[in-house]
Image 1: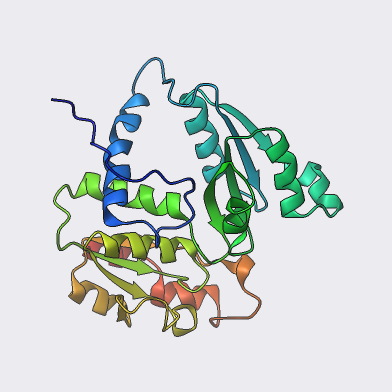
Image 2 (image 1 turned 45 degrees about the vertical axis):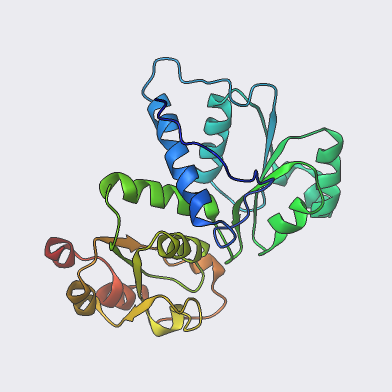
Length: 261
């Protein structure tokens, strides 16, 4: 019997967020990802899954890990990969996102991987092109592939995930990762809590998340995993806490807190 997961789901053109995915779709993606991880251990790290297809990466924000991950993954699936360097394109002369997409459409691009500082831009692009669009992060809104990777990693550590508890610590307000990752964990049946300064934890983000006040609350809650977010200073237009030192003292991961886990 084949170990490949059976797919009876309706195909999707785009991957734009986690909120719109069903639990069945998430489970299928997580099960399908396993064999691709094994690919990295082979001497020949290529499969023909995307042979003859073109993938274009379009990053309006700086990125190292995400952009390189998409490029490597597409290449290992035998796609032709093109990175459009925003800083050296007509975008710097005022070309709009949709103008750029029209140009890409004329090139018959099959997949567009886009990151943008404004929420909703990947959705706009998806509605304007026949190419499949993958959201690599848009503003504070969503980062679906990061959330899928987090869920995949969590399941590798905890093969029986039912009833597991995760705490997300840090800058919840400005984090698209926190939004997407908390959503996917909730959809998969996990309990989710958050810890951070009141100014960085929006009260109306998700009603399913437990609000913790400090690390003692966190330890009393007995989480299975603690997810640490960096403070996104580049997205802040005002001061949200007195100082970096004060933030780390109250909310950072100290050696003493690490040893208590």
